[in-house]
Length: 179
Length: 316
Image 1 (cartoon, chains in turn cyan, green):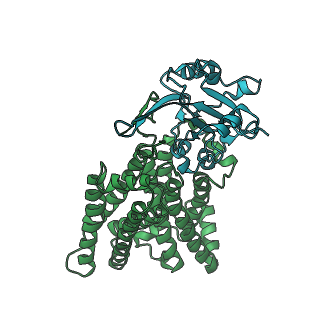
Image 2 (image 1 turned 60 degrees about the vertical axis):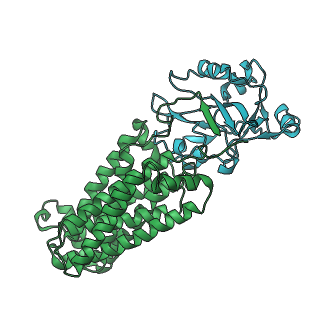
Image 3 (image 1 turned 90 degrees about the vertical axis):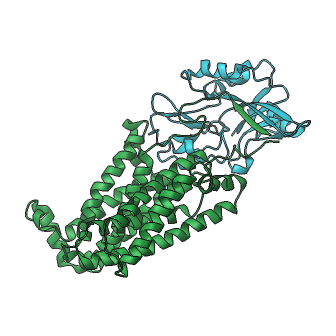
């Protein structure tokens, strides 16, 4: 059983937002909403200010609080790749999952259900890459099976310094940023 | 410096989470007060006071049914995908406090209804034959009355606890992520319920009893709030930042003025003087307690959404 994850090289990402546009196009994300976005984080003190540009989305956590708090089972871990998904016609729109996500990765779709990144599971099941990964012009995004030690993502994580987002929140996110 | 810039601007999420408006605090307040009503009414039923129809507590199960229905309607209004609300009752999700709550609410209604049948008010007798028959059956078996009283107290306790656990289980919002929150909401619910009876009753014994009980609840609530902040301030940086939202941040003025001073300290002082026969009982103290309980839920729900991990966490 695969355990899908993503590795994003922040030293290559230029924040062009191609990933954002590709996601909106592929998934029909309504105007005014984003399943993925660009975060620019600047920290430090002159002359040692660090700048990191990241393409962010749902982290498809190994310990997903959004799944735990869902009262109907709409938020669930999909058997294919352990991807965290929402079944639209089971979601009641209580928004507990939105409140439970430390990454603010979810939103209420104008049709009423809660929506978020799916890792483009409909493409992955056909052997394709997620839309955001497939269009990245700097090839900074990598998608694959984290449980396979020979996969591209596992090799990158083994060889490069990296960090996930908010590991202290205990969600065990599956997106890692190379630095 | 530490600066985060996001291109995302999702409705209800950015620039700060504001998914829950007035409906959730109103529901939490009404649910908490009904929990208090059930514990008080259950206690009186257990002690055989259900025979005194001149007690305001006699009508608490009836009032509870109205208040709980109003609270659940507020909760329903908050749902974004209302036509699928029935999905709550096709599953039980043990890790979801909201799932626990929806099933607890389903048990609360029959328990309240049974408590109304222990002693039907004179004006309602002989109207619906089946209710009279059930009431007569209950009264033929005193152990049933005691069990109904106990059941109401237990379910009232669960209802009051769940309203707090509902929020504290959401670890991404540090202000809510406290094991003290359910104790605070349960105590506040009991306090508001006692104040409500104090407000309505014309019986001196009942008023004195409930005013004294309310004083106890208010003093206990102060301790709970103090311990809530001790827990927050000795926890992680996001929790400390969350506590400061109430202590000296943007929600401090409302919290200190309407929750602590006008919602607890002032009515406590008035009621302490009243139970010691220094001043007469008036509607001022119970009204302040009830308003304080409602504002507490608003402050906790709104400030909790403003508390966050990323505002203080850095990835460098």
